[in-house]
Image (cartoon, rainbow, N blue to C red; front, side, top):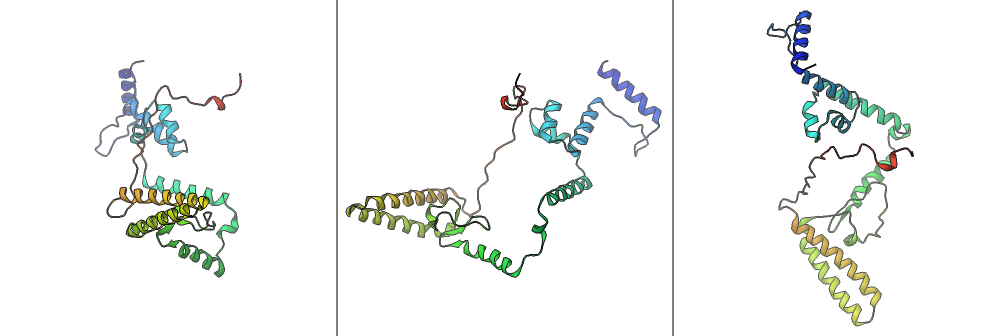
Length: 224
């Protein structure tokens, strides 16, 4: 059956229903409209959008997203359903009111995150794994205003390395060199940072699906 034949059958069926649009004209559908309906119903019904993209034969998720009609009430209802499911999976004791001691501990955690070079990014409730050696810590968020202080620290560390080598403290010198390398990496990060101090965003782009992309990995297939 050709596309034109399907279109004529749709027109006759819609005409027979007597349903009109707001302008009083008979409704008009194309075969392609049903792909859009399917995509919207499937994704709003819980099908992951990347799976819908493969079913529809799209190479990019951007094409599939253009098919989806997302209405405000669907957005609110779906998000609330997501929250309800998440909360049902969490222990009920997590939703009780915190005690005064717990609240003070929570506030103190954020007070202790302020260090001389910026802000410690470790999550709440986790100890410092680097023994407060902030210069080496990857979660230290450097304050751009502390660049001169960081340069002073590097200079001081290099002086201490020369002293250690002069006195034969080879182990101490190696430890100090690790701190120098970490400090130089942080200086390099500051040099690449924008002038307003805001973090830069990395554009990762959209994943592209091709016909050669496997639907399953070898590990997921059942043995023959």
